Length: 338
Image 1 (cartoon, helix red, strand yellow):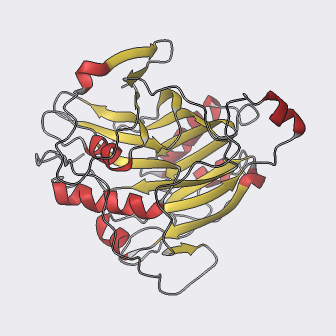
Image 2 (cartoon, rainbow, N blue to C red):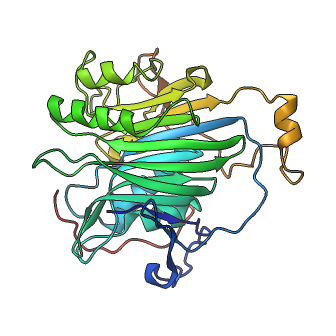
Image 3 (spheres, rainbow, N blue to C red):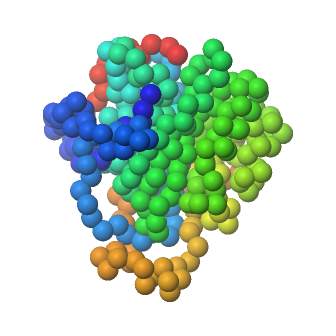
């Protein structure tokens, strides 16, 4: 099971045919020592020096039932609402003989770079974690978190070249038992050093208890972060989805995106965090390449006001109607259950 990195597709105008290039046409090894692979290569360009980013995690509930075009469109609309710079996705159908490649569809909709980390990787079915990014993904690694004979689990560890340097994003989906999660967190924390690069750890942690062992272990490496309730969407009771940031002072706020469309698209609400890197120093400016832009990249959207911060209560605001910027749809083939 190896991660795959993909450059962004240009969003397709409505009614236009999907890109005919296949994954096999463009597949090439870029980092054999880590097992990483890439599809094609993103064009080299100067990257804007953004200091504030929107980071999101979203379990899209892809493991149950058949993935139809309309199901993927609902997810695409929610991603459009988030207007995030980096998005971690869980339960993503990644193709195979019996499954739709939903990530390819979402990449076409958003025009973002993508990396995939399958936890199930067979000719019949590919399924697992993914990361979408407005910025180039320089490297990606897969960490196997499988435990005993339970469902295979993993973490997708990506290095993203954002506006203020390299950001390490570790996207994961932990297991259902407390013993399993404790072992997986220990393996995660042993795999990276928060003293090296800035790190964001995010995903569906599946921890149902406020004082669960997995959470207690994580807060020894990361500052405590707000934990809005994201599951289930019909009546959010549990904070299963989490975002941790190191350095902790970079975290500005965390909110659950409780739009009407998000309520219908999955059984989890997306979780969105704003991070703000430390102000630039004279040394940062002196070391920056001359071609680097001094202004943030222009987002093709604005986030809706349908997020609910951890500290607020009451009914969430409804988001306005949104049309995803894409035309191609995933195959209507059924995806088998995990």
